[in-house]
Image (cartoon, rainbow, N blue to C red; front, side, top):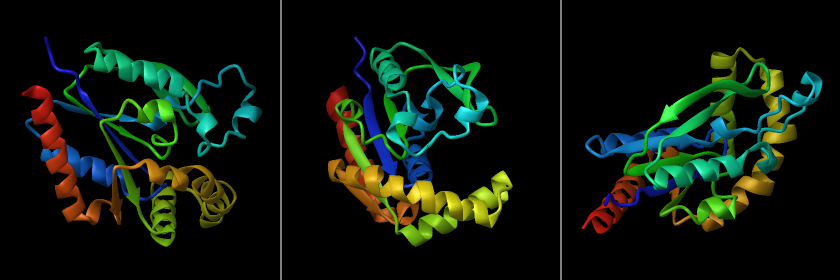
Amino acid sequence: MSKKPIIIGVAGGSGSGKTTVTKAIYDQFKDTSMLVIEQDYYYKDQSHLPFEERLKTNYDHPLAFDNDLLREDLQKLLDRQSIEKPVYNYEMHTRSDETITVEPKDVIILEGILVLEDERLREMMDIKVFVDTDSDLRIIRRMMRDINERGRSIESVIDQYVNVVRPMHLQFVEPAKRYADIIIPEGGHNYVAIDLLTTKIKSIIEDKHS
C-alpha cells in the first residue's frame, strides 16, 4: 500500500515571495514526486452572475475562493486519485470550461495568500509556512509585476493596493501568520530558512516512508 502524501501550505501576502519559496523547495526535491497546487486556480465560478457584478469581485477576500472544491481535490490527491484542477478566466472573471488533469504525488505544495486562513485546509497540512515580507517590498514587487506583465497603470495598481489589497492583508492574511509552523522573513532570498524547511520536509518524508 502506498504511503499517504504530505501537504505543505505556503502562505503570505501578495508580492511576499511565496512563488519563489515554492520554487526553491521544488528545486531541492528534483528526485521526489512533488506537485504544486495554487489557490488562485480555485476562485469561485461566477458564471451565474452578470459580468458587471463579476467585476466587483474582491479576489483578496476568503469568500472569493471555492475552498470546498479545493479541499475535495486535496483529499482525492491524498487518496492517490487524480483530479481535474479548475482554470480561472481572468478576462471573464469566472471559471473556464477547461480543466487540468493532475496526478497524485508524494509531496503536495499548496500555495496562496489565504491557505492558512481556512481551518479545514490547515488541518490537512503537515507543514504550515508563512512568507513574511515588509509591505514596502511587497507593493514594489506587485507594482512591477502588474505594470510589466499585465499592462496596468501605476495609478490603478496603487488604488487597488490601498483600497483592497492592504485592508484584506491586515484583516485576513497577516492574522493567519500565527498558525504557521515556520515563518520565512524576506521570502525566497532567505536561504537559511529554506534550507531548514527542506531539511524538515525530508525528515517527514523519511518518517512516512520508513
